[in-house]
Image (cartoon, rainbow, N blue to C red; front, side, top):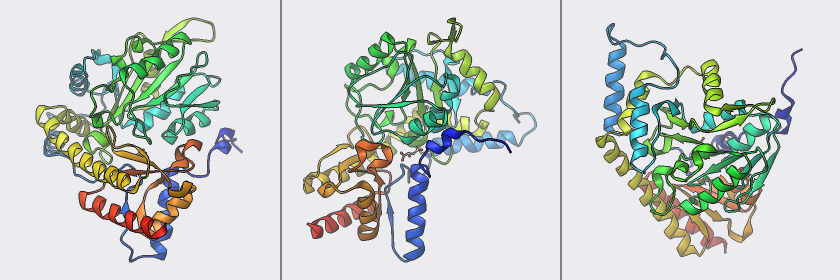
Length: 395
Ligand code: MLT
């Protein structure tokens, strides 16, 4: 009989959001008439903006015409039109990228995990706690030792892989340029590689926060940046993102010679990835057009307004929280220091509001909870009214 990867024994039974869906389904089966408000997984509620829909439709029409039909994309790295559009976007915050350093993906989740393929299994991994669970799960699958760090206390064991996410999922905190520079400096000093997840970059509202790790001097020698259009432009169901791998970033082989990480990543993608569909890449290109940018700014503004409603509620209730300002997530203390799964059940059964238990993101979240601002305005207002009612009745 074929043997399986023993590392899977070290994973939790279910991936966090699958576990939550399972618990919601069980609840709905028992309580079919309840109207639940979902503020758990960070899934958007606004539809794709018109510029994106139009571009996607036009591209699908092209696929139905012999002269404009397209089959496999040659490299699987993404069409130049989209990679150039991404490069143009980065120029707006002062980052110059070569088109060949940009790899189009189906979103940040896959590449955050897949990047592990190119590192030796004895590289240590640093993950800030709490963190998006994909970093820990994929490191465990790869048989790597994971050490947890504080968001603002840079550490880098020699030759390690460091996962950073800013604005952070789940806490909503974002690095200033100086804070991020401290991580870059420590990574450079220890030949470590930073895998920087910038999936929530578009939600940054404070100007002192870094929009990309490549705004930091030296980052091109130690960092890969992973980004997604899921939250920025409502692509959670459409799927498109990008990963930036600078040419200068080198890894060491077992014989001591150096090899550019981009060479290994290209090789990995060549074998395992056939690219994102042409219509989706055309739709994604439209996100970066003038019209697309104006339209997605409105969507982000809508979610920001929801985040403000959530933050105002916690201020009123005297509950301490982070996030909301540069992020669609608000991360707060469970009342009376409740265990986060107990608070999940309390919210589900008493307020009929779904959130995410903090412990799902790490031990530092054991008594924390995350709500997203991605539901509708009306549902956000209603959820906060329900939350106030159950919490005030409780105390
Ligand atoms: C989250 O809720 O943390 C994210 O939406 C999950 C994801 O992007 O995979």
